[in-house]
Each structure stands twice: as structure tokens, then as C-alpha cells.
Length: 354
Image (cartoon, rainbow, N blue to C red; front, side):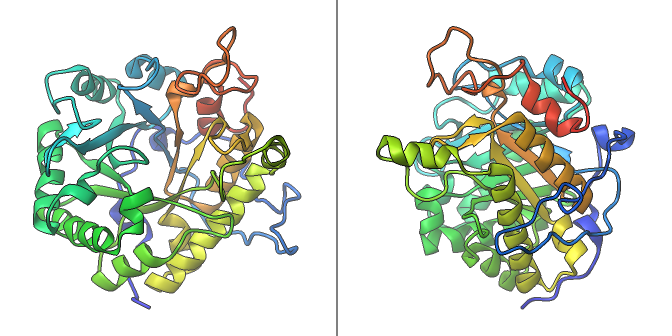
């Protein structure tokens, strides 16, 4: 166990909505009548009232992306997490591996978020395509690629979404940890989020433990509590996936994350919550689970109650009713009954119906 100082949130900036905390009931899961598997209740932390930063994912290269400036102003999010910077060739960072970092729609969207008072976060990696974490030859080259993007876009926050082959590779995990240490040392004040897959009981601890041993302390470890197990292969398995209580599963996974952070870093419980985040998926997931608007409200109340650092989801591109679109049209709608942007508003104002 590596003991890290007990400073809450590592000096993380509180911007946007945090300066105007929304008055919603701070209901713990016990108050909601929710317990975890086995009958355990969720302990209540002594969290502050400002709430997590809400920064949903937005992809400019997928589906029908909404205009980020007006959406930020109308929903009250703190910013957007722009997906994804990938490897073009070797160790060259490009949007989706093909578009230049500056001079196009992606840079204009980043600037629009900033002009609207929000914080743009750029995400590296994701679940598809060639990642810099795989392709860069060593940690120094990977750190240079990260810094190239930070400089080009004037970033104050980045997200490294490490999953699939990159996460499975011990060499890629080591490379990523060392590169992020170099970036944190070279860019004072940079907010760093690391996003990783999770089972219902919490994430695999290999990357967290390696980071703690190396002295790397992200501002938040963010889990993706969906796509549990293998995709369903028949109708019976699909129906079973759709019966999963995704709010309960999300809380269970997050409590597992908190336990792993306490073990790895020596955090007190409140500090472990303050270094935790959730990145879920709205509507029907690729594994046929269903995450409803009400699930989002439950997740948001839990996150506020316990002082989590970050809430995100994949994605605002999908935060619309399908209407006449046949589902799956998953790049532009959620697949469940909803109003436009209702999932986003459920995270910023969980006590209010759209």
C-alpha cells in the first residue's frame, strides 16, 4: 500500500456549475432503500455539497454531434469530454486517428465549450482503433504525444480511457503510468482522469496498483460500469441483460473502486470517494443492458452524497429519443423513451424532472 497525503481532490479545480451548487436533496443509497448485493448498505461519507464535475463524452466524428456551446448553456454541465485522440501512424496524435488536432471542427468545438464557460477535456484511447498507448514506442514518446495535444488545444484537463487491448497489455499499462507521471511533472495544474472498465464488483486493480506504486495520483479514477461479461448471444441472454438493475450495479462497482483506491493509496474513505468517478452509458448498451433516466438520477444523487470527483457518460450524441429512427441507431439516440438531453440534465439536476 502506498500512503498518499489526505488532501481532498488533489487541488482539483472546481469550475462552472460548482460555483453555483444546485440545491437538490442529498439522498444516500440507504435513504433510497438501496443495499448492495449481500445486504450491505452504502456508508455515508462527509462530502461537500458542490457535487462532481459533469463532463459527458462528445464525439465529433460519430453520428450527429450536437453543438456543444448551446448544449452546455442549456443543461448546466461543467464541460464535455471530447472523444477520442488516437494514433495516426506510429506515435502521431490525431482526432479518431485521422483528423488534425487544430484547424477543423474539433478545435472549434473545444473553443466553443471554453467560450460558453465550460472546461473541455480531451480523451485519449477508447475501445476502438489504434491507441497511442499501444503505438508509441516508449513512455517518453507517449508523454510527448500527450503534451503535443495539451499544447495544441491549450488544455487544462485530459482523460486517458484505457481499455481492450491497451489495458490487457502489461507493457502498455507500464508505459501509460510512466508517461502520465512525466506529463504531470511537466504540466503543473493539469487535471488528469484515468478511465477503465469495471465488473459489477469494481475494476481490476492492476493499473491502479501500478500507478500507486509509481507515485502517480490521478485526480479521478473513473470506471465504466456497464458491458458486464460477454455480449448476449441469444434472446434469453438479451432479456436477462435487460433485467439488470443498472443503478444498483453502478453503485456496487463504484464501492469496489473505492475499496481498491483505499488499498492502493492508503486513502481515508472520503478521500477515496473524492478520487473516484463514474462514466456510464445512456439507454441500451452494446451488451443490451438498459440504463434509464431514473438510473442516472440515482447515480447522480449517490455521486453527490459521497463527493465523487467526476460524472460522465457515453454519450451526448445519443442523448435523444430515436423517434422514427430504427434502433440500433446508437450513434444518435439512446433506444429508450426520453426527452432530448434528459440524461444530461439528470446528472446536473437529479432532483428535477425535465
